[in-house]
Amino acid sequence: MTFGATPSPGPRPPQRSRARRYLPLGIAAWVVLEIWLLTVVAGATSGLTVALLLIAGVIVGGYVIKRAGRRAWQKLTESMQGGGDPSAPGGPASSGNATSGSGNTLPMAGGLLLMVPGLVSDALGLLCLFPPTGKLIQRRAEKLLSRRAQYAPGTFGDAFQQARMHRPDGKVVQGEVVRDDDPPSPRRQDPPLTG
Image (cartoon, rainbow, N blue to C red; front, top):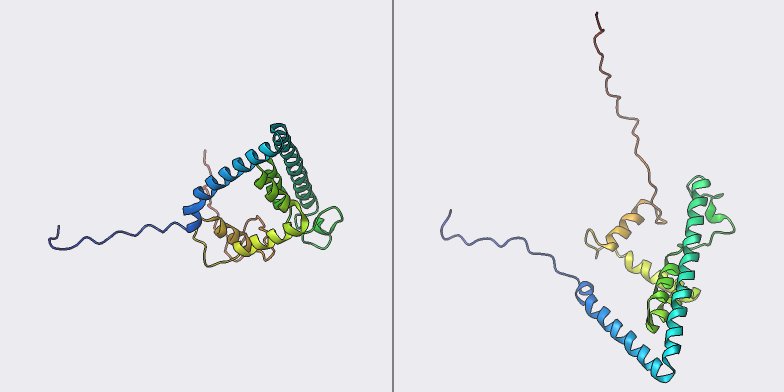
């Protein structure tokens, strides 16, 4: 034990980002806005109209998610049957029934937003499903996620960067590394059995 020495401060915990700090407040504001809009629509029309809007949103959202999931499953099976490389010239991505683009993320997000009760979430879901705004949202999301310097290890942006690092188009190829330059390990010789 030393006397007169001041204890050194330990490592400082990392600062929380603004997004993580204000996310709960944003979610609470969104819920309040959704409830307020539903009451305004119910006051202008009737409660039955609001109920029908909410039920229609759940039905349409479920259909969209089911269709996008089925399309993703078809792409997966086609890539497995076609040799595993969808970007090959004869691969599934160049076939007629596979859609171009990054896939089914936005339709699934749009379907999920349609299923969430509320009018703002329905409007956002429809924006994700409408092709021009969907492409705009997709480009903006990729631009936000591709900024390399701002993401700490373990965050979603870091995981996106790790996935895009392996191949320029963002596809990660699973496999095993086999090195031929290492000499084989010597085999152990057992002494002969004598009886």
